[in-house]
Amino acid sequence: MLEIHNLSISFQRNRASFDRETLSVVSDISLSVQPGEIVALIGASGAGKSLVAHALLGLLPANATMSGEFIFKGKRLSPAGIQELRGREIALIPQSVTHLNPLTRVGKQVYRSARLSGRCADTAHTSCDRTFARYQLADTVKSMYPFQISRGMARRVLTATATAGNANLIIADEPTTGLDPEVSEQSLAHLKELATQGKGVVLITHDLENGVQIADTLVVLYEGMTVEITPARALEENDLIMHPYTRSLWQALPRNGFMSLPPTPSSSTLNRNGCLFAERCPQARPGCRQSAPSLRRVNHKLVRCNHVAG
Ligand SMILES: Nc1ncnc2c1ncn2[C@@H]1O[C@H](COP(=O)(O)OP(=O)(O)OP(=O)(O)O)[C@@H](O)[C@H]1O
Ligand code: NI
Image (cartoon, protein in one colour):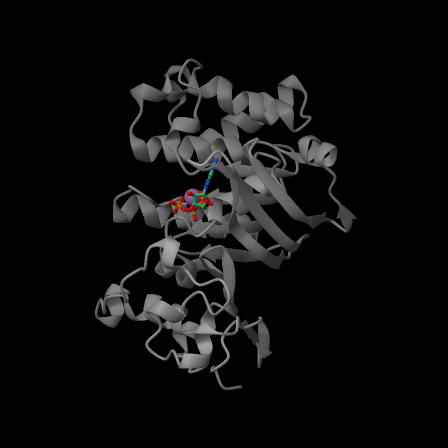
């Protein structure tokens, strides 16, 4: 359904010396999403997860430069094509509830997105009602403004807004952040349900547990690079072939005893000539700082590490 080929994103930054430097934040990311599949983009804060989604949706800030291509349902997406599909075929459940328009009643926002997907007024109303019921939002919520509803409810409204139309690809950016465990579970269950209906789902999260819980495929990002693409179940099966960064994330999960991650070096010390994870990697060898590993196929997965045995 969706293929991302060699996506790179950089920003121009002014330096004190009045010249400009290029800051590379996403490098050469490729991934694909099939109908009914949940692909989780996993990575720490600043890894580039949201930018991948924003690039796909044509929402990058003006100072960003992007290369690479998107193929959606077999067709290459042009910038104009992206505008055409956004909200109709591809819908974003944004990271922050502040994306709800503060001045528009909640019901109207969900209704508008149903209309945007090409539904006529009557069908849009029906779809809006159905979506409200589906996400346990009372009818009275329709006439409320975003500031009048709880955080958990606002997340459900965002989900309702993204799914009231007919989108086949749903991108959920950190759908559980700031929610209590019960509401988080519910939020993930809603995504699972969308996949069961045949929609492609991209789950963006810093929490590996979320990915392992509902995703089919994990794409692990480190400093804007893919370090591993693996079936999610491989982690549950305690796969020995794992990128050292994925392994650290896995070991840091509560169920695995909260082993702490090695400390993060500041970005300025990041050595782009070698493996980006080398400074934190428990298995790093001298060669890791000298040559950058490429993404290699090892059995059923792709791993960017020279020392993972296949
Ligand atoms: N407009 C911008 N100008 C310059 N740098 C930016 C801009 N937007 C994002 N970045 C940088 O790009 C990197 C990736 O940002 P992104 O928002 O994709 O991270 P993320 O993985 O979604 O993190 P989080 O979990 O915090 O949401 C960050 O280091 C950020 O500082
Ligand atoms: Ni983000």
